[in-house]
Image 1 (tube, rainbow, N blue to C red):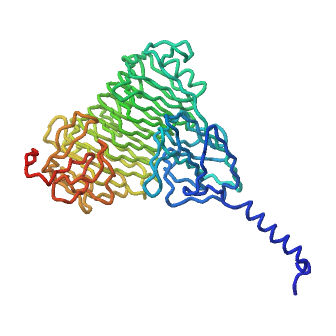
Image 2: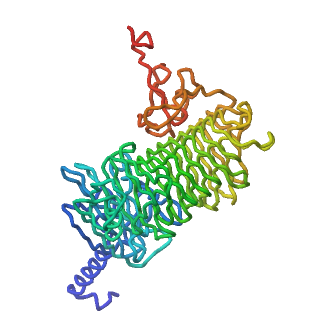
Length: 562
């Protein structure tokens, strides 16, 4: 029998309207996915977006690497915005809050591959409700950007309203190379002036070409920002051996601080000769750290625990650490290095669980190395090129298209040789250690160039390899499809143009021997993969950090004479 309350048509209509209103109030936000992102027409912009708890996470959403105390993640409940720049570069500040957010800025599309804007990622940098903030981010002229804001997965809420804003950031233009400061960045502005003002109101510091001697070092603003030079070799910041070049924080909240297009050199400190970072997300983009010294760890740079590091197109060379990490020492949560070279650094320790002439890392969550050259480094103890001391139950490691070549290690007995790469997983992990399309060769004991030892590993972990080349047989467990062991890779000496790297010789077994499904899309020098390096008409990517140039099969002679 029909309920008497529903016999009236008016009551039925009211019930339907009430249900529709309730459903609408709890619908997913309109910018729930990338295809329906909200367009930001002009700055400043702000938005209050309710019902974010109803937003979904798409399979194409990018991983945000800057997450503190956790793995890279696509987050949850993601929403999207879009902003297109005008005829000139712009510098912006973005903030998101109301709940625990992560924010990322990207170019491209999910179908072509979203590419993070270097410096455009933050977690927990807003200072309240675990919100996020990016300050002083440079956006290139006439470019469309996509902005994603996601929730950090462990933290849930029944109802979430996003507070998001985007505005032009302060810009501080350095005009003078002097090492003095009056605290004001005006018509006459030293680098110290700019950093001091940016500490009070974070933004972008623009440093023209020049040699800036900063004896005593620079203390960067504690709440994030960015410094932009005129080019890696054009803007040189020199501590003259009198202190560390740059210092950022001591277990700060996870602010993002980015360095672009400059050199830090001649630093000297107890840890991190050229740079020290603690607790932040650090971005090094086209940065060189050279000729610096640490009395403990990180001759070039030291990144303390709870920090994350994203490094791109950078050079770490000529640095010295008395303990671990002659070039870099990363004792943080997540570390990624792309298209970079770590060369001719040294670590002086012979102690157990220490070393790494070029790189030492004790990471607890995620390690990624892509198109990296580690060459010519020396460790007095073990790990001439790199010592990966990996500590974490959920650790994830991916190494692809790297070259660990011609590093040397200390005068240990032959039975204890630990060569170019040392891997030490201190806590057993079910997560795989993926090592693909890479070459390890020519690593040897410093007391005997013929005492070759390329790779050693201790601990318990799942080791997945494929299409790797290792000169010394039985180094680690390279036995998957496409792996080559016991071969001479026939690499040319380090290039002197651009970032140092080893190009395969014409007859190298690395040429066209990579896995097309997993090779990086470009190489360490910015060349698109794959190229037809052996001239057989079939372009396949190479093993290692550098792709050999293609052979012109239309020509009879290699010198170009037809």
